[in-house]
Image (tube, rainbow, N blue to C red; front, side):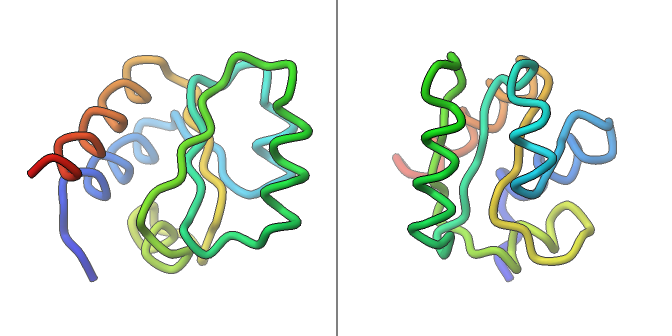
Length: 104
């Protein structure tokens, strides 16, 4: 299991109560989300349905290089493929952590 800054920040956002996860929860709260993170092993059908649901919204859908089990472990939940961030500050922090890991 990777112990990197993105996963740690994701856990921090969960403890702060700024995340929703799972397809139904994320789609239900789509109007208040700043970013949505997608696992690397998300099914094509789920991705298609999610992009359709967020077609009119101004929300970033970001694919990450982590599997469902890694994301679930980071937030202290069962394996999860879709994580929505409800706070703009946490969304910016998480996107920054992803960009930093890609460039390093």
